[in-house]
Amino acid sequence: MSARQRSKTGGSTYTASYAFFEAIWEAGITHCFVNLGSDHPSIMEAMAKGRQEKGAHFPRIITCPHEMVALSMADGYARVTNRPQCVIVHTDVGTQNLGAAVHNASTGRAPVLIFAGLSPYTTHGEYRGSRTEYIHWIQDIPDQKAILAQYCRYTGEIKRGANIKQMVNRALTFAQSEPKGPVYLYGAREAVEEDIEPYSLNQSHWTAVEPAALTSEQATRIAHFLVKAERPLVITGYSGRKHSTVDSLRTLADAVPGLRVLDTGGCDMNFPADHPAWQGFRLGSHSSIRDDDVILVLDCDVPWVPTQCAPDENATILHIDSDPLKSLMPVFWIDAVARFRVDSGVALRQIINNIALTPELELMLRGPCYSTRWTALQKAHEQRLQEILAAIRVKDDAKHLGTVQSDSTISSRQNFNLCTFALEPPAARIVLLTFQTSLCLTRSGIVRLSLSSQARAP
Image (cartoon, rainbow, N blue to C red; front, top):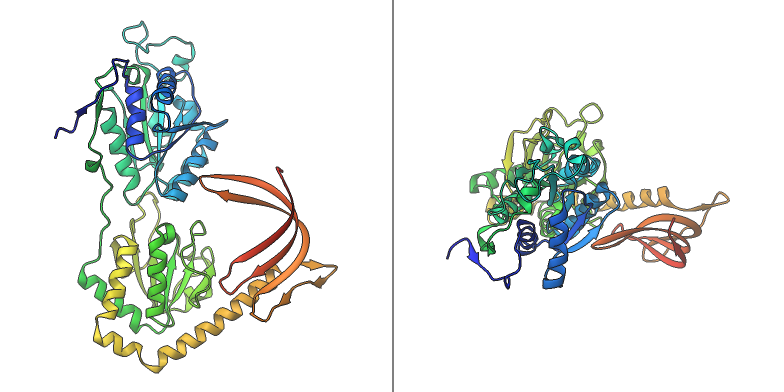
């Protein structure tokens, strides 16, 4: 079947702008966060047409007061749902107003499609969409994409309307392939206002790059390093973005008693806090980094800061990452003996299977030293939770109100104000809570709050 499968529109005008919205909906985008301008007349017409003709089968349009708000919302939605979302902004000034939000989306590996208009390139009405306003000259700059290209996985110009769906899907293929991140499309009014023949694409032909895996020899090598290490450590930053990878990392920690896991990212739950291997969250410095003899860096941008904390010079370092060279960082290197550009979840499952199917490693793991290491890890974990309690216990008139209950769940009571994010995907809101609470830190490291209060906007 042809890539361009013709469809019917009942004789109504079919513009490139309308095809754009069809393309993002067919690709799985459900929300558009927009801040519109003089380059978007046909975009607004397509929004009205789509809402009237397609109803719920059309992206939901959310108008935002500022471009940074728009991209931040799309970023958050994409991270929660693991599906790309769309942002539409106005020429060069709207692109500039994305500001730090595009940095956040890039470093946070959030798949977001950004579309911006260009100033029209005709001045005397040569094409529909030609310049009609003073600002069309002022906002015409030599290279608009250069404003944020270095943060994007792909940039592309929509020059004509006839292949707009292919351009959208090409951009989204980059956005959803590892390492994921924002992509930037831009086009002038003449292109997006163009009348075209209606068409659709076969979406099964527009998929992300499949995750890469270790070779069997590489999986064997890593498994032997971890099992034979005296003090193995995994440092991770964002592996938890894929929920299945959390389970795989926990299984690895169970399979290799004494292995520890340190989180240095902070934006994803990478490893459960109720596991004895959990070392907590640190940015660039932790005692285990200095002490361990084998370190597996797993999906992590900054495993340590050398001037603050560096591994032992004799430590063996392995690096598994979708981008181990950190191609967007001019300065980055770690003293790894091997680097693997693979999917972390796939690699972990390969390593676990290799350990389970290698008699030599299975025999070693039944040795008494591993049970001793496991017991020591459990004691250290319990002590760590107690230290967290000491740091967060609420005081009143210099007296601790906390109590340790029989099940070792730690709690305290107090009245206080808290500014917090109430996360309800896909949206998040900030509220000020005044409450009386039972603050409980459980063995799993989860803080539970029992509220009796009022909530209001700050």
